[in-house]
Image (cartoon, rainbow, N blue to C red; front, side, top):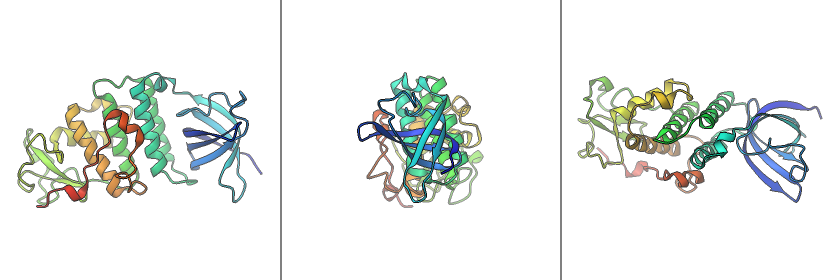
Length: 278
């Protein structure tokens, strides 16, 4: 069996028997793979390369028909130690790992997703996530994950009448529609859309930040976003609902939520069936 090389980001690492580890990673050219690292627990052979989030160059062999690769050597490229130094950063990074585990194809190239996760982890490694920064980078990650998965919400105009975003007043709120992947303007939406307590509404600032997240590199998007933390809470609900409804691999988020989000108070999904009909 000929050895292969690829860059890998560790998504999950679990003990196997007494001395080995099974490591699941997102690789640059092979998608999500799982590999057996023999004698990884009681040996320094792999160092910290099998720790969560670590970016390494893997050397591995693949046996036809086998579920697991055999990991033979690793070289750490970046340990992302800053992520593990702070609980909130750790929770946000873990949530991204879980999302990738569900969305990414196994044993299929997904270079763009690899770049997205590596850049998101680099941002968390380098920046504190206080004052809403963590939620902004998570929303930017979700926006780009949806785009990667082929879901492109209609955000520039009303789903019903086509009124442009630029025609709305700054204080207006729109009613978001998960099933239709877009929003209704005040005239087309149901009554009550302006109420700040309406969990299915978005401010114009939130929509503007969606567009920033879509069009700006993820390491720059959080600083460019201007909506309030409350607006980003509602934008998150819209994005998470879109994932659950539209993104392959995410259709059971309502029954099997992303565990890491519990530590951030970000579990709820606005279900499409709860949206008020016109």
